[in-house]
Length: 390
Ligand SMILES: *Cc1c(COP(=O)(O)O)cnc(C)c1O
Image (cartoon, rainbow, N blue to C red; front, side, top):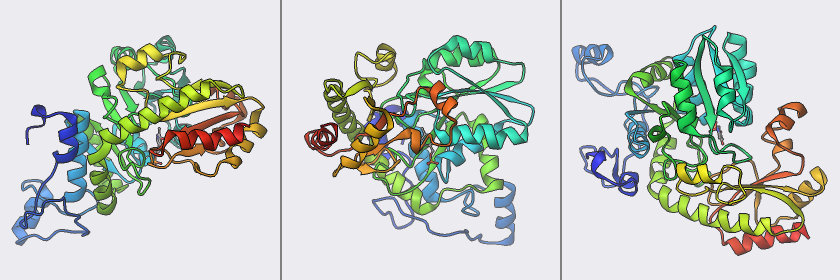
């Protein structure tokens, strides 16, 4: 199928499908660790790369390849390489494209484990990271060094939904001879396509909206064939591989991505507007609200404000924990991108490993709560929160 001819909703359902000799309608799950060869000569040709075809599921599996092809179609990327988790995808990006002595400029407002990965693990192997504001491109320009190879940003960010100007950061990165990598987890390609704004690399935690139902872990890195060759080389040798089962779940999950993202966004906007009107709520962060500091930019880059709403309650940690404990419907869990709404207190969970100073610099207060708005009735979600606010 020629992807250029079709809309994203069609690609989500049909791109990447490869059928076996049985001509099955739905995509098959290939649960096999290895693949057979017809002869010694064919085995040798496959290993040398002279003959296409699967070898071993650490790096080639038809179900995983279908998931990669479908996600590449949705993002408009030349190539996608799947991984066992979002974190493995971020690790593979650095391990596949960088070396000791090189430098990363990263947004200060990134996923807690990503900060740990850059600061505590990659730092020990000689890759240094400077953290800057996601919303001030001049800080990125000032942080550039002769050895800077990678810019890394999430937009919108977790948990404050800060929106970065992807085009501006791409221009600064390219002037510096660096690549811009975007963690596109919060929007998914249904709402934002970073390559169209000049980004070089897209990273996904497929665990979130791509699966969409909180079932499996997975991740992916996307970009040009040339860049993905390095990322794939790390996968092939080091093995942080996505299982065929998880790939199949994500592949089928993507078929409803646009529908779900529209519904998540509709609920999130209604909830954000309602929260903004509650006297016990000091502040609401949602890119779809005119009160959001980067509202105009968000509406240029994204189709909607997305499904994540954060808000600060009056009364700090005690008030925030009370609200969490009063819920009966919302799930108290750190995951997001599920059909079920989830509520998280970032300061004591997802961002608990940051120092209080790092949290303060990132604007994550003790009264902050994040809701990943699910597909329940928004009236029921509001009623669940109203009890705790009262
Ligand atoms: C969850 C998440 C990750 C990590 O993904 P895993 O699949 O849990 O490893 C990375 N970035 C963002 C923005 C996330 O929300």
